[in-house]
Length: 181
Image 1: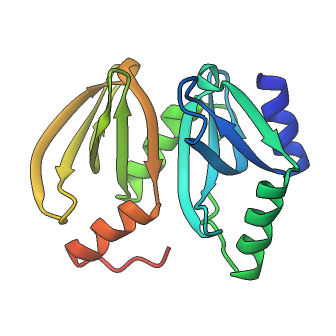
Image 2: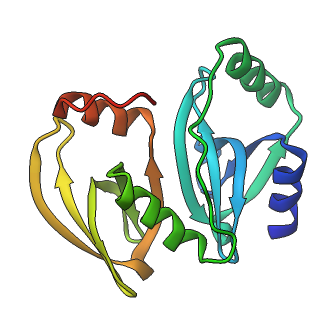
């Protein structure tokens, strides 16, 4: 599947990425921004054609891809007609993609959402305080923008990382931080 994802990135095609074998209504939509050895980074776009930050996910999680269909063409048209853009990220091609993304999020104090391998029903949201070889320490935030303690996450258990999306933007606004997304 990595070859197909790399091809989608090179062709700059909008792609629908299905990652749940049991639910074909749930998928990621957008442009592939970066591909690592084990993970890919997508510029996520909502069903309304709005920029929705970035999502980092395992390549192995991909069940199937779709591109060039009516839905993808609709999303692309909406995205462009609504003048949507994603912040450009400086990805270091010589380092691990996940480590790179974690470092970008920590350095910029981006609110980051983490879905863990065994618990995708309750993502952890917050600002990264520290990263080491095995773990990520996060100052947790509630959906209301309030401090909610600390989480220590084992890197190997992180399934999905999302940042600069509408959910994270809402928390920023509620915290009183006004960052232009």
